[in-house]
Length: 468
Picture 1: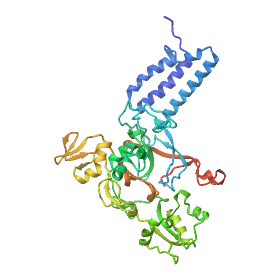
Picture 2 (picture 1 turned 90 degrees about the vertical axis):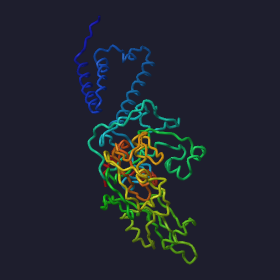
Picture 3 (picture 1 turned 60 degrees about the vertical axis):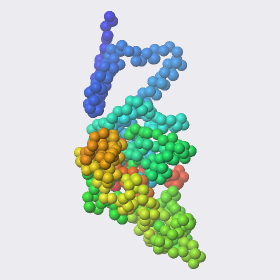
Picture 4 (picture 1 turned 30 degrees about the vertical axis):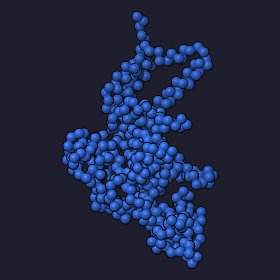
C-alpha cells in the first residue's frame, strides 16, 4: 500500500478549515454536522476521492470550461450560505415605511441580529425568494422539509425595531392576485370563485414559511402586550406609545382653486405615486361634503388632494398660501375588513383593538372570541388541527378548554400608517417568520427623478438603518 505523504501546508489548511467548520457546527447546535470533518480530511489530507481530477484534463478548452463550472459552483454555494446565515439583499417595494425607508432603497438585512434560521426548504436556488425569473416556476424543491430552528444571534426583536419577515398569510397564494392576501380574497369574493376563476386569480398554491414573500415593517407590539389604536395613536398596555419621527397619515388638502405645483409637492416631500386628486372623482363627492368641503360658485370642488404627510409636512402644508383647508382622512371610508378577517369587531384602520398579543408559554381560554383571534396561530402557525364539534373544541382530536402558545408573536405596522397593509389587516407575525434586521442602505434610487436630477439619493448611500 502506497504511503500517504502529507505536507505541512496541507495540515495548516486542514486545521483552519476544521476549526471553522467545528465552530459552525456548534453554532448550528447540530453535532451531526461534525461528520462532515471526514470529508475535510479527505479533501485536504488523504485525497482518496479525486476531488480535483478535472484539473488533470489535457484538453485546454475542456479544462477551461470545467474551471468556469468549478468557479460558478463555488460562488453559488458561497452566496447560498451567506444568504442563509449572514445577510441578504432586500429592496423596499412599497411606501409602507416612508419616510423612514423609501421606495427604491436597497438594504443589507442582517440575519445574525436575531439569529439565522435553519431553512425549511434547504434545496433552493440562491438569491431568489420563491419564483425563478423568466421560467416562472418554483425556485425550490419542497422535499426535504425541516422544522423551525433558530440559532443564537446577537440579540432579539425589540419594540420599534424595523424587521424583515415572511408574510404570515402568504402560506396560500392566488398567483395572479396576491394583494390582498388569499384570506381577504375569500372574504371578498368567496372560496369557490377563487378556485374556479383561473383567469382572474390563477392557480392557488401553498408556500413553506421561508419561501413566503418578504415584508418589512416596524414592530410596535411585543409578546404579551395588549395593543389598541385610538384616533391613530397606538397604546401599549394602556399607555400611549412613542410615534416614529417620520410617521405619516393621509390628509385631504384643499387649495384656493390653483393646483399644487411640482415644487410644492417636493416641498411637502410627496412622491408622484402618492399624489391623488380626489376632487376629480365624482364618487368622492358625498364623502367630501360630509367632511365639510363645499363646492365653489361653479358647483364644483376646488382641487382637493389626498396626500400622506408627516407632522413636519403637515405644518408646511397648513402654511402654504395656496392651501385653503386640511382635514385628516377618516379610516371608516375604506371598509371594515381587518384582522381577524370574517369576525366582526367594529374596528377600523384608525381605531383598533384592544388586542392581546400571544406570548410563548401563555395560556388562553378557548371560547368563540378567542378562537376568532387566535385560531390561525393554533392551526396555521403552530401546526395543530382544530375543530368545533357538537359544542366541543377539539385540538389534535382531543377536547380542550385552554391552549398554551408555543411561539412568541409580534404586531407589525408601517410608519406610513394610512398606506400600510400590516398586522391590522392580517394579524400577528410568529417568531419563526422573522428573517432579520435591516442594517445598511447601500443604494437608493428615486424613480420620480432622472439619474442626473436626484435619481440617486446620494445622502442615503451607505447609511445605517436606525430605529427612528
